[in-house]
Structures are given as C-alpha cells and as structure tokens.
Length: 367
Ligand code: G3I
Image (cartoon, rainbow, N blue to C red):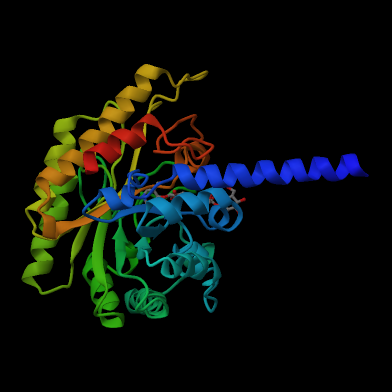
C-alpha cells in the first residue's frame, strides 16, 4: 500500500514539474507566437471543407481553426447534395460547416449555385420549356441564398461555364460517353443567357453578398480567359451584378509560371475581386505507378506554392485581393486522390496534418 502511494506521489510530482517547466519555457514576452497562415497574410487564407472530415476528424478541425480565416464549402452546397429531390432541400451538412465557421468568426464562401456537374438525377430528367427551367433555376438559387443570407459573404454563382479547348460556352454535350455531359443543362434549357440570369437572381435574394464567377484552367487556356473577360464586359454594360472572379488554380509542379502570372494579370484588369479559389499543386500529374514523393519534388512543390503566393501579392492590388483558398487541408483529403484516383500530395499538410516544406515556403511568401 505504502509503495503504491509513493509511486502515485512520484508520478503526480513529475506531472506537476513538467507542467511548471512548460509554463516557464513558453514566455510570451520573449518567444514569438507560432507563425500561422491567417496572421501572416494581409488577405484571407481559406480552405475548402468536407462535411465528414470536419465532423469526424479532430486534427482536421484543429488545423482549420488555427490556420484559416475563410472557409469554402467543398461539396455540401452543390445542387445534388442540397436539393436532392424536387421538393426537398437538405441544409444540415452545409449548416454544420457554416456554424463551425461562424462560431470562429471565419468568412464563408458559398460554392456553388449553378454548375454543369454534380446535379441530381431528377434535375437531369426534368422536362419543361425554357420558362419552367428558368423558374427552377431561380427558385433553387433564391432558396439557397436566402437560407444563408447574412452568413455567406460571397457565392460562386456559376462554376465552369466555358470549355477547355476553344473557350466557348458549354452548351451541347460533346462527350462520347452517354453518362457524361461536358455540355451544360442550363445553357441548353434556360438559354445562353442563364449566366446573367443566375447572377441577377442571386443578387435579388441577398443584395449584400458578393457574387463570383469561378473557373479553372485560365493558366493554360487564354481562350477561356478571353471568354471570361468578354462575359464581365457584357455584364458591366448591362448592369448585371458581378463582384469577383475565382481563379481555381488546380495546377502542378510543371505549370508554366508565365501562364499563372498572365491569368492573374488579365483577370485583375477587370477591377473585380480576385479569389484564388481552389489552390492545389499536384506532384504526380502523369499518374505514375509506384510514385515516390522525393525531396526534389517536395522542393519543387514548395517553390511553386511560393511563386503563386508572391505573384498574387505582386499583381493583385490590395483592394482586389479576396484571398487564397486551398482545396482542402491534408494530402489525404484531396479530391485528386478520391475523385481522380491518383497518388498525389497536393496540399500544405501531409496525411497526419503535419506542415510540409510547401507550408513553410507559402507562409514565407505571405509575409
Ligand atoms: O458522399 C459520397 C459518398 O456517400 C459515396 O460513398 C461516395 C462514392 O463515390 O461518393 C461520395 O461523394 C463524392 C464526393 O466528392 C465526396 O467525396 C462524389 O461522388 C464526388 O463526385 C465528389 O467529388 C467532388 C467533385 O468536385 C464533384 O462534385 C470533389 O470532392 C470536389 O473536390 C470537386 O470539387 C471541384 C469544384 O467543385 C469545382 N472545381 C473543380 C473541383 C475539383 O474537381
């Protein structure tokens, strides 16, 4: 009994000493605070969040709480998730992410109201004339925007309306696989002016929300960039509300620096806010089997992250910087693994949410 008590006493004293030692060593007047992304940057730093990860993964939640001050909803606000049946809206998952962000005073970026992808089966089967399709689109946009009014600061109103090859508007399906549609149900059924209508409807529902057009590939497709610029000019001329452009930036370690800089420079000329909205940098773009993430590749990725952040800071005037958002948090969370089925390491944190070399170079560039 005596032996047991002394052992317990010894253990308690050891714990007390450890705690006191830790308290003494962390001296806030001498030690600089731990550097984190959101305080290093003069503009918001975001992450796209998955519902399941945020709900179940404590480390994930901790990293986002600490590092980011803006949150994009990765999937939970897409039509297929939020409006799964004609009369059913399912807000729980998006609400969960929004509540997490609001409780921590983080900005919320809504993604996305109208897209050619991730639509529910019932919508693809819907039969109606142009007016009925228009009413359907309007009701969806206004229901979702109204639900999040005062919470969501900005919306990606339309996502990826232009084609990769020639930069023209997606309309008819050109895919050979019948179950794939690289055209757009909205352009086909509402008409080519669905873009302007979508922005108007969103604005009516929440006049204070900033409205973005979001697109990928501007760093390699100047045709796409030109189409976006033409769309913005047309909107301005017709007084259609648009406040920002999302430059997704799903790039890889070999993406041309000139291409990246050109895209940023061109879009910035519109005077609109520029959101680097979905940043990730692939290290295995050719999908090599038995891929090894070598030190050399780690350095290349770190250099690219640094270039992206530096170029954004240099080329985008302060009042146009809406921020840089990473497309998820740890490498294992990336859509490149789940959706593209590729072994890759495209983000700033590894599978265990440890900071990678890329994290430190990105952080350095922000300062
Ligand atoms: O949630 C279901 C799960 O219940 C089911 O078991 C599983 C089976 O495949 O699918 C799960 O849903 C998947 C979801 O990701 C969550 O992992 C969907 O099938 C899959 O289509 C979905 O992929 C998303 C993709 O957009 C399509 O919506 C990716 O996570 C998301 O990162 C990606 O994000 C897009 C942006 O919205 C627009 N820009 C490009 C970007 C990358 O493709």
